[in-house]
Length: 249
Image 1 (tube, helix red, strand yellow):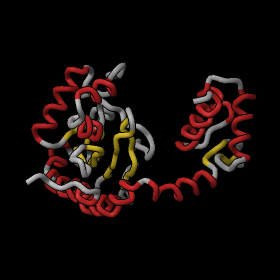
Image 2: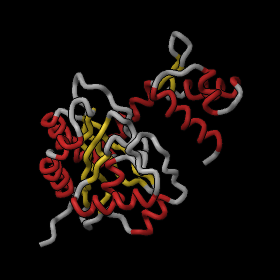
Image 3: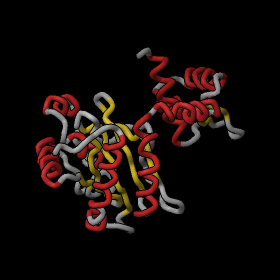
C-alpha cells in the first residue's frame, strides 16, 4: 500500500471516532501540520471528510453514504442482522458479530440497546486477538498453521488483571473453548466489560465468524452471561444454517 493511501486510511479511521483538529491529525500521523492539511483538504474535496465550524475534521457525508450503500455486499452481516437484533432485544445486552478476514478478525456488526452505555468496539475494526471472546471462538477451531500465522509476532499486552499475557495461557484458553463450545472474555480488555461468544460455521463446516453477548459487569457478571449460552447456541446455529451449514448426522 502506498504511503499516501495508508495515511488517508489512518485519517478516516481517526476522524470516524470523533472530529479532530489539523494538529491532532498531524501528531497521529507523525507529519508536519502542512502535510496533514493537504491530505485533509483532498479528503474533504472528495466528500470523505468534512470541516466543522470549529475547524475540526470529521467523517464526510459521502463516506457515510458509501458505507450504507456497501453494507449489502457484506452478506453475512446482512443475513445475520435480524437474528442478532432479536437476540439483543431479548438479552438487553450488546451483541457483536465478527468474522475472519485474512489474518485479522474484524467486527462486522454491532447491536446496541437504547439507553445503554456504548462500548469501545467499532464495526470494521479488528479485535484484540488475545482478549476478545469472538477471536477465541474463531481461533479455537482454526487449523494450527492458521493460528500460528495469526499469532506470529503478536504482543500479549496486559490490559487488566485477567488478561492472558502469554501464548501458552492463550492456547490453554482455546482448548477450554473447544471443550465447552463457547469462549469468554473475563474482563480481559476492559475491567468492567465481559462477554461470552460462540462460533458460526459455513457450508463446509468451517468456523468463519462468531457472535458474542457483551455486557458491563455492573449489569451482568460472567456467570449471568453464561446462563445465556443455550440461547446463543440457537442463534449461531440459525445463522450457520442460513449460510449453508448442516449438522452432521
